[in-house]
Length: 382
Image (cartoon, rainbow, N blue to C red):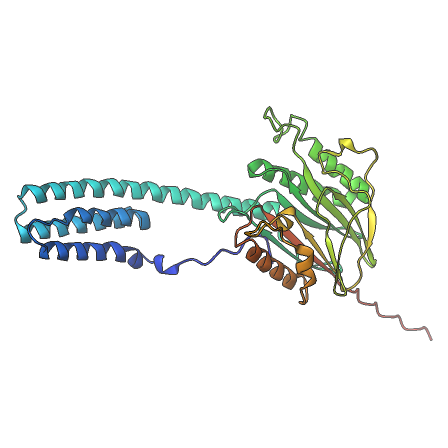
C-alpha cells in the first residue's frame, strides 16, 4: 500500500459525451414540441436558453456551440410553424438565443482551460509526492512494511506529513513526522528533513547524533533567513514533530527518540502498547528549550510484533459528535495478519469514523518484525 488516497466513486454515466448532451437535447425537444402545441398567447422559446447554458457546465466549447446552434434551429422551426421568421417576437428570441449561445461557448472554453491547468497542477503534485514521499519497500532487512498517505482535501495529494526508511550496515532506520503548517512551505520543510535523514542515517551511527543533525537542519531554516522564515510573521515559528527509530538486525528491541510526535503503537500477542518515552524531546525547531541533549530509549520488538507509526491527523479525526478517533482501541480489535491488512483496516475504519472526510492529512506506516532465518551449520571436519 503506497502513498496517496483512493479516489471516491465517480459517476461514470456522465463521462461519455453522449450522456452529457442527453439532458440539453431532451430539453430542446420538449420545449419545441410544447411550444408548437401551446396556445398562441403562450411562448416557451426563452426556455431554450437553458440548453446551451447547461451544456457549458457539462461539456466543452464545441459541444456548447453545437447545442446552441440546435437551439437556434429549434426556435426557427417554432417561428415558422406558429407565425413566420420575420415575426418581431420570434426574431428577438432568436437574436437573444444566438447572443447567449456565443457567450456561454466562450465561458465553456475558459472553463476547459482552467480544468487543463488543474490537471497539470495535480500531475505536478503527484510527481512531487513521489519524490518527497518515496514508496516504502515491502520488505527491508528483517521487516515487512506498508505505508499510506491520506490527504485531507480530495484534490490535494501531499502536505507536511512525512515518513522514510533507510537501510544501514547495522539495521534499518525509520522516521515519521509532521511539519507545522500547510502548502508549499510545509512541503519544502518535509523535503529538507527527509533529505537530511536519508543522507545522515548512514554516517551518524548513534541515534542521538542523527536526531541532533536533523534538529540543526530544521533550525537552520527557522532563524528568519530560510525559505520558511523570511520576513513573514511566522518566521522562526516553524517546527516539526518527529519520531526516529533504529531497528538493529538480529535484535529483539528497538531504539527511539520522540520529538513531540504521537507515540507509536506496538502490537504484540493481541495487546496494543504505546511506546511512551520517559523523557520526550520537544519538536524539531524548538529544542533550544532543552536542558540536555537527545537521549534514546529502548523498547522490546520481537518476531511477530507489528509497530504502527502515524501522524496526528489520525488520532485528531472527529466524528459528527466531535469524538476523536480511538486508534489504540480500534487496533486492539483488529484480528488480521500482516502490515498491509492492518493499514487497510485502519484506513477504512478511520474514514468511516470521520464521515469520509479528514480534517487534516494523515500518514501511517506499519512495520512487522520477521524472524531471521537461522544460518545453516557447517559440517564437522573428519
